[in-house]
Image 1 (tube, rainbow, N blue to C red):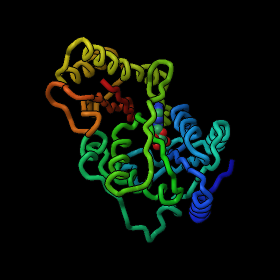
Image 2: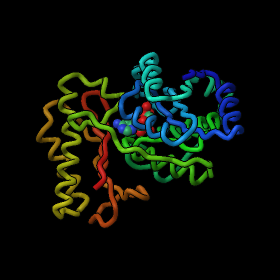
Image 3: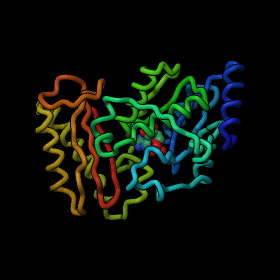
Length: 282
Ligand code: AMP
């Protein structure tokens, strides 16, 4: 496995690999890798000759009062994990390389970034689509892997690839969870013991709503209400719900009335100072 920190070098490597007929899979990450990230890499390993993992904490996708400055990092641990699952290249650019002083462009997906996380994190998805476009151009993947944990992000990337005709296949990978159901996230490291334990209630509340939906409760508002009630009942630590919503899983529009199409229940909760997201297909 090789670590490349330079944008000219990674692009030359990718160009040469593609010219010689090799296929490339890309897994973009912000590092502090866990089993969710590793699942993406394992899936990538099965699909291409070369697997490139990028590790880059992308400053332009963080808002002014978010956790950019304390986002967890462990490059040595990350490199060991990548090596273990057979990654070929770990791309670790610096901020200055990706955003030199002269930088002035951006990529924006307009409609489906307005709700959910886009509403609470203005500019976030523009930061994501801009950096992912840059990573695509630098690593020239045939195929790229993203987690369903960030369900809206996956939909936004698919939309961008479709709209801008990137010749890249996008693969979504199911959420990997801790044994108590909490969706794995680098940000879980922020949770003190007590909040970490209580965080499992988020997934339990989604499961509860899914069961009610299966039993015949089809009204979107009522299902979201049950999630909220479950959290109120089970959580002892202070928390704030940012959103609990049901969306059409294929076009990412909100469902307000009865659910008649494949749907996904999405939630964002702030537990103490930690923002957690999760979702479950109904
Ligand atoms: P991040 O490092 O948080 O930007 O995540 C990098 C990629 O890993 C994104 O495509 C995420 O959706 C994906 N990912 C993060 N957590 C999980 C998880 N628990 N299960 C599956 N994919 C995940």
